[in-house]
Length: 338
Image (tube, rainbow, N blue to C red; front, side, top):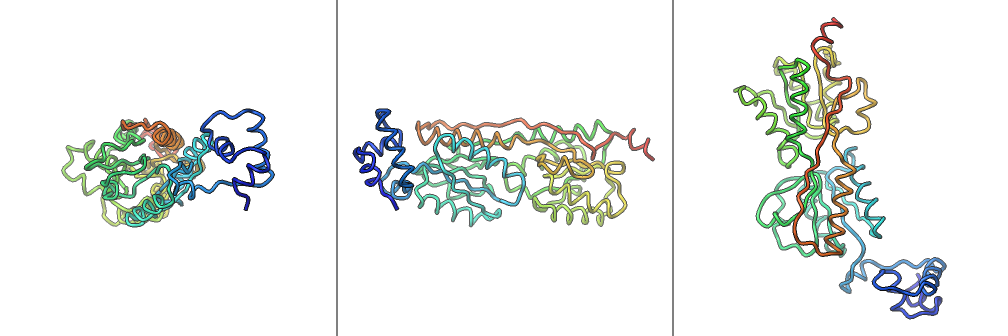
């Protein structure tokens, strides 16, 4: 493997000049820079980020921890992070936690050992004791924020889920649906908690509203299971609010297998607007989250924190929008079809 000394020798320059060209830490004459770049290409030289980190130098790497790599919600977020990072000369270390808080902490520690310059984190729970400690590198939270001692110093980029859930509930009211149930994830993250609490607040006059809530996971299988429990409960309902689109897909399958037509008998609304929502049959009414923008903005924040030393935390809430498709129809439409 070629070394920085080999590059310097082929280019006919000093090692420090090669280092300045690679890191962009100082102006180098154009002709010298061109020779260094040509030597790097010819020799196939790659700098060693870990070695640089051991010397206390920036490694030009960022850790990104997400909770579920199989959830189609996250690829667009990763793309947003990666596009900004690549444009600024950073590489991404991607870690998946499977919504496991212990694994999340382990991967956080491993990224610190890898000497990454900063960490972007989508938490799997609001309980993150490892973030309570004094941070040695910048950390920015995506999609979910956490509360607790010392955590006010953390920047985050999230979506306003209170606004999003109210969009759904007002829409269902406008189309004549009055008996709504909620299928969602346990409220252990900020996003799940906001959606659940907004649902309760909207129906605060109903003393039995908690009996119309079912908790599971953000998966299609869990949506299937929750919908089966809903049918077995005997609850009278005409609409279903789902914590994400995958839950909605599972619920629709169960309802239609049991002779309940979506949308004529029951309206269903998802959350996320993953790409398959447009192609599902029927096409899913859902909340569109600006997922790419979450990753994009968070990537800019972490790079600014790394390179410019910004200490003041930035708390950014993006606004979602309702996308009305085929799974929610007015009562008049239902009546016209029966």
